[in-house]
Amino acid sequence: MNAGFSSVHPGVCFTYYTVIMAFAMILYHPAYLASMPIALITWLLLHEKGRSLSGSWHYYLLTGIAVLIINPLINHRGERVLFFLGEQAVTFEAVVYGFTMMLSMLTILIAFICFRQAVDNHKFLYLFSSILPKTAFLIMMSMGFVPLLTDRMKQISIVQKARGLDMTEGTAVKRAKDGMQILKILISWSLEGALQTADSMKGRGYGIAKRSSYMKYRIDGRDWLIMASIAILSAITSIGLYFGYGKLVIFPSLEIISMDITGIVFYSAFCLLLLIPIIVEGREILIWHCYK
Image (cartoon, rainbow, N blue to C red; front, side, top):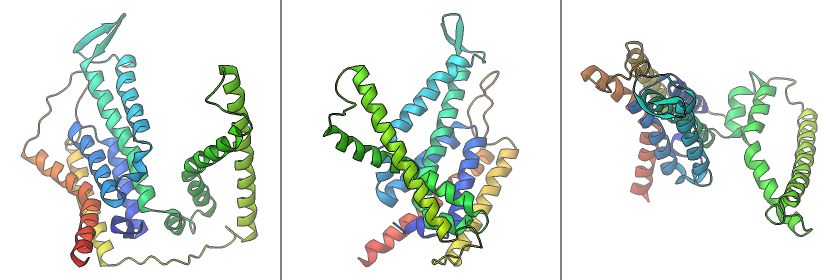
């Protein structure tokens, strides 16, 4: 669906999600980190009703919960001891740190999903094929590899069930053997497809000269406005980060979570940065309904 924020120039989209992922890794404040996945999921719901998350959200949630649980078990720093697990202390600071790590990881994962929705394969190649043709092609194939393997696994499983190979029935040994056979077929199929793709790209001269594109993405006034907004709001957030806003001191003792007037200003600028795709998407939805 090439509408809303995904209709913005690919370079602008790439810049935006690069900035979001960078902030997800360097910000350590619950308010900032909690706002990021909420904003990203809201855009997905507006853009494609969350279909890209419908089949995988529970995996992301379980991964985040695992990070939240494991971190206090291996990180024993902090002054406020909640309880002892054997001889190891589980501290409140370690739990808070695990919570921030969980939010950071979930933000990066969801941001990748949003990026894939906003920048498809053609746009990705348009951005990087002239600079790094082989690397861009490999990255593009890697991003689509997981859903491709999932679809092929389903097809192979349906066919093999007719031959009596079923990973869901029988003893553990039988299920393991059937699973290995299906995995062998999947790997063979994937390698064959990779060789065919490589021969096809080589036959077309991919990477020999600078790649041209049949699609031209021109930066218009809206794109410049969005890019300027990203730059200004990112700069304000970075300035706030330099002065300690957006960071929470956790170790050795958790500081009090609070915001003064200056902190609210920096946080508001960061929220406006998060709202850029939502504003663009909402504006287009509103225009569509007005002229419908």
